[in-house]
Image (cartoon, rainbow, N blue to C red; front, side):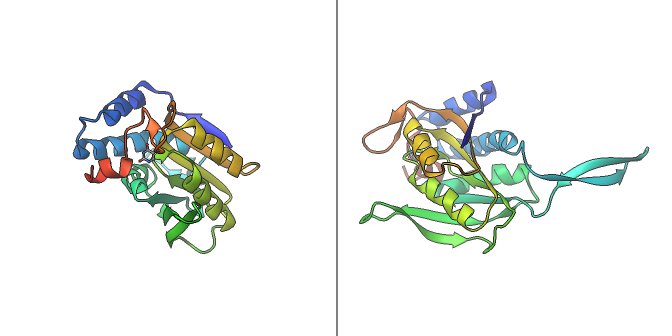
Length: 210
Ligand code: URA
């Protein structure tokens, strides 16, 4: 697993406002979208392209365009939805699939409760959106789900991560072609599974159910 922490003052500035308990939902949503576009720029550094010939007003030349099959963006419901528009803005030709992951309260294992994805992901580059990498259980399950469907490389984009979550995803995806792009790695998880200092419940803050 390759981990890339986007180290940029604009990202740290926006993260600081995002973390602030005083920041209202409307600003929170805008900041998640802006942060996502900045993280998407980092995450798409290895997006597959193919060369294409064009003619400028001055001369013929060769450039590149996003290759087929197009990348697939997969927000994890619910909070990953808040990251979708920022990603699509940068990668408008990508397709979008959805995954809903929840913990089975009996087995404590992450399970898939909703899925809208192409059956065959052979050769697809996938970008998974999940703002908070806390215990890592649902993100690891989502990544494995996509790889089992044939995805060739998977990049997860998270706004914040706990070291415990990173270690869990690393252990679950050992030897697989997985990359994680992050806004920041925080101190730890608390006893309730929240990232410390974190920003609280990302879904609640996005959708105003605090
Ligand atoms: N999910 C959240 O939304 N916040 C956390 O701190 C941990 C998991």
